[in-house]
Length: 497
Image 1 (tube, rainbow, N blue to C red):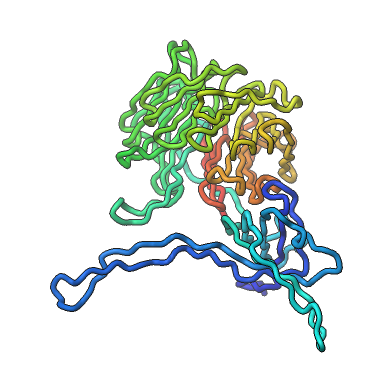
Image 2: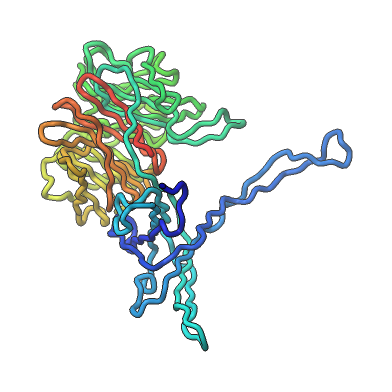
């Protein structure tokens, strides 16, 4: 009979000594002690009771700063130096738990996994090196303090019902947590979201959800004219607290490109022209990016990049970049970001776009369109390509490395989007298209070790011309929202445990 709980014998320790996106190794004959993550002490605030003499009442509570997150690894002393003994840099530690899986497997070898990121050595000790009597094994203990943790479970694609009759082109969700209180009702990550749709014979109305995708409802009105696609959608919180959806027109018109926004679930839309070019449009879902209400970026088909400091209401030209249509934008913060284009051109800024540096790209990808970019810091970047390749650099483009992403039983044909949770180098997601024979499928994949290992889930078969899954929004370690569909049907999936 299967056990209902794990025991210590179900666990095994793996370690990344090279940091995120490096090869993990198993740490045999070792145990991990208590993992402590102090969340911060609660202090009650008292005041005299207004009408009960001599009594006090609680009028508020304050929470202190969290304490150091710690754990200890103990192993039997080997005859040769262990790699922990020689390690000088932060490491990532993974505790895999499974009743039946082969402990020699990292990917897929767990039912539950505890990830401890950026663990730095704080203390070491040794025991039982020599004794007058007894024959206890000699041991080494290493104490660490770590930056962040995540509890990981295997993921699947759970389809959500939506009545749209055109393929989804993009998806956006608010990733905020709010407890019920003075600021309003409780809000969970992924509770509020929008889906953009491809062009149809009638004006397309995007769909929205207010319950995490349990129900999807069409907006009351359409932001653009008939036969125009909604290429991209973003969500931000306005200073008023209103939830603003921003959409971009993906079809060339007679004038400049258009972006529109709503704060009333599409009852009304306010449109704004972007740039002054004739017949320009947003060419890909990745070409509209909102860091927050005050930092929104839009790239156009003519290679111009535009900035809005007020949630898409007004736009100003930031730069005219060479390379072709802008297809991907990502900013780490208001100053640091990447812009990718068709034909494998990439640009980097560290000063909010005052200056853009052209980045040297892998020669093997010359002429291939970039579909996704991630800027983790000033030198660690990821780039996803239209042809299904995934590349990364750890030195700001001086050298590029291909990370082969495999979907067992399928051929990866395109990677349409790449994103990392909270723009940190730990947990990454991709969405794309794969094939098996003549059949086309969508897929989503997650990496919990910084991009070295990827585990994928696949949709049912799609139309031969379907793009697969076209966008992905990380919300939690075990939750991302993604969308795509057949030519005539939008699909939204929760990539979840």
